[in-house]
Image 1 (cartoon, helix red, strand yellow):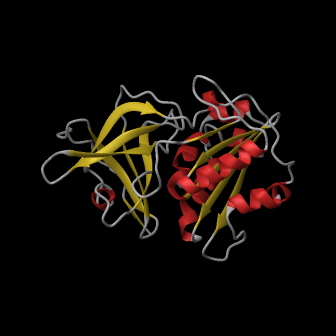
Image 2 (cartoon, rainbow, N blue to C red):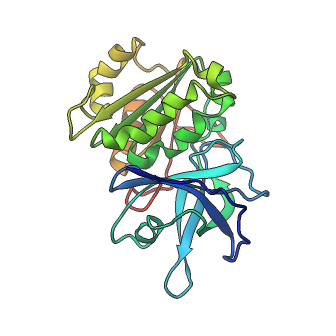
Length: 275
């Protein structure tokens, strides 16, 4: 795991169309890395939304993919969390970026993983696998989330403990955050699990929901349409499985124009080339 020193000098003029400058890069494992870029002054987004980012191919044609913004809406920079795909059209190039490089960023944010798409409730569950934690990294740093919910439960399921580091450090740092540290304290619960390596909690979160182990560990009742709201982001298999569990509990899917009990991000077919 290595971190590239943040950009200390003034940003160079942007030479790439729709370009933004990389200000920070960190590689967490041989499969996962995060980076931050400058934020266009015109960009306004809601925490949890995604944008299209990319790089030019060998012929100069943009290669673009949907990436959730991992930083909150108030942040002066934009953060992204990505998987590395050796033969991926974009990530094979993106994983090589360094501080001072430029990426393409389209300033039209969209997405369903937003608070506006949920009905008022008591507890908010954010269920993620792999890089699906990215939109929740944005949301758990947003004061509005803690103003609207009494308890926020972030689950993150990965193959190994090393793949949990991004989320674990994020949560650890929140308590000392000058903006929302006091709001987070006592409200945010972090529930990590691993599937291919032993850890404090081993197993798939879907199995723990189905068996009731998750609720027992948290000391809360099973899902109810009155109190609980659910956000889902991960592999297509996880999304569909938790969608079934939500609907079995009587929950209805929400949307920007019709808030509901749960929402899932449909923009990503899987984690192969999505953040």
